[in-house]
Amino acid sequence: MARGFGKKIVQKNTENSGFGATSSGRFINKNGFPNVKRRGVNVFNSLSWYHTMLNLSSFQFISYLIMMYVLINLFFAFIYYLIGVEHLTGIDKSTPLNEFVDVFFFSSQTFTTVGYGRIAPVGFTASLVATFEAFLGLLTFAIATGLFYGRFSRPRAYLRFSDIAVVAPFQDVSALMFRLAPFKNNALTDADVTLSAAIEITENGTTKSNFYILETELSKINTLALNWTIVHKIDENHRFSGFLRMILKIRISKLLFMFVHLMRCFQILWFRELLMFRMKLFTGLNLSRCFILTRTMSQQF
Image 1 (cartoon, rainbow, N blue to C red):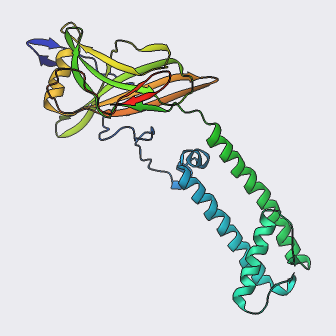
Image 2 (spheres, rainbow, N blue to C red):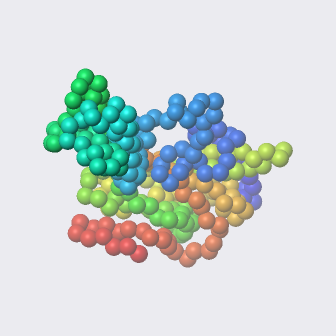
């Protein structure tokens, strides 16, 4: 129960947030994934390698592929060197370094199945290792191709959000507002939003989070072609008005934003967490870095 502007305002705490009452800090990272640390399982079992590779940045993804390519070829080059360079024709035997360099490039030719030049395996052992390496190379490049296609074809909303949420005048009352807009030429349809507030409170020396659903003026639109201002009206008739005003004055809260839309044949869930500012006086709507999009150009202000 909270008291605001001389009225008792009761807001029901929702238990359907999925984060639990004892969670605190940031709930969702900037990349859209929950800020959760799993215990009781080792790192290898807790990671989904496929989704991890899909969600890496382009630089990290390419770096991992290059690193794996070099390490695999170094591993097989070391095996060929242990077998003996006499089992490979065309090796430059002037120095041990030249021998290993030639063996490394022979391994890369085998791994990529590009075919042999002046260096070729001789004997059963070297041929067996080369056969296995060629098979492994085919599998590796098939997996890499699948990852490339998965990253390329993965549907994305390409949304830009205002950096802050503000409380500003709206229809003779105040409203909590922030703005989003698509910045790509993809079509977003059936856009639906859900807005929740996470309030940290301390009881008996223990900090816990309460979650409250915030009703929005417009929760669904058919087509998201321009910018969309998400508005939660704060009026005296709203059961959350006094509570929200009190929270804004005394502490920083968090907003959990869920965005669901359809993009052609895909359905995507988008999460965003916006840190609310400390209460300030605004005479009008003033959103930072908000994008206004028209049919021909975009303008930032």
